[in-house]
Length: 561
Image (tube, rainbow, N blue to C red):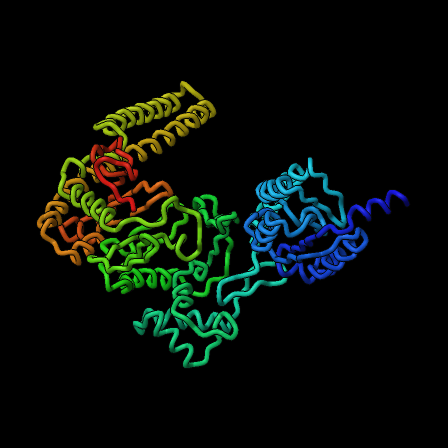
């Protein structure tokens, strides 16, 4: 009793902050873990300990993240000396990961702040270790949950709560068609194909006819119609695992997964394959770039993507600049205005996917246009790029075909000799069957090998034909590129560029696609190919096997801000 009294006297006058947290809003409705229940128990705890509550922090957020607004505000208040003790309901309410635990420990140790919990004891020496263990448990839980979802998808069940418009989830977790909404999907496809209507016109007509959209209380929007038109599920297969979403302190990052890692879930088809493919073909024909940022011209508008988050680079123009000098603020107009490209992941979603958020438009445009023009006008580069598509030695396939044909002919002669021996009575029927069994196996193996060699030999011939057409095409396209005005240069890039990707360190990778329609127009009697030439960097020393990596310090080109 005497010890308790001394402890209470020692605590008297101490200021406390109470911190309550739930991971998501659904948990706040649970009686045992709700914020109100946590707060009630913490208030009773402080009263019993003789602690004076000076501030309260309440929030909904993940325990592994240190970028929680109330958590950060609590750390700021701790540095300013607003309280002496932090009280939580349970230690995992403060942290479930190493990074928030490290940030918290840095503050409490520097300012000698106590940590106390209602439901468990906090040992300052082991708090960081406990947080790390909690993070490992959380990662294991996520991994088990992900494996469980993949297993459900492989069994034909839907591992999420959302399905495309026109479907519902049955009680056993399998997809089923909502016939009323399925009719709307078929109507959208019919309007797009047979009536020539675009997504915006279809959405407007659905609203006029008072057709209920996918989200109650909302109107039809052209983006929803576009999602329906490009969704592969409507022809019978829904894919799980196309992307992996990882929550980080910098936001949710999306990582595209290889196609062999996807899990296909059979869905009852709403439209047939022919209808779906027809819509995709029409979408490509009708697509035109949106008319944004028309006040300033951007050569690479809608063509540049971030290699980290996968989002497009938007265009930004600065027309005025503000300068502070000797305590005064000066504003002046920029002539010409400064133009920049900026990743939408940074601009709209505040992702930390880039070390530098802005890229000067002039330098990037000069780099890309110069490289595209150089490749189109340089026969040696085109030949090197097409040669890189094939790794076999010249004439090697023809030798393999001739050798395999000889082996095949010799084995067929063995079969003929075995039959003659049987007819002459020198071997029995069982002996003939035994020999023919092994001969047949060898024949089948050699025929399969011969088919493979002939296909590869044909590919070599097609590659040589492709080279002739590509060089003829490049000669036709390359004439007059230097004299083109800016608008026509952009038209050329929209045809030739497959993609321009820029990574976190501002390395630029340009992929040049040769359009198949142009090759057909030259006179190619066979289906045309898409030849993709890839290189990294400024190209000052580029060959088919090595490249000069473009960084902002590259002596040949610079696109830095």
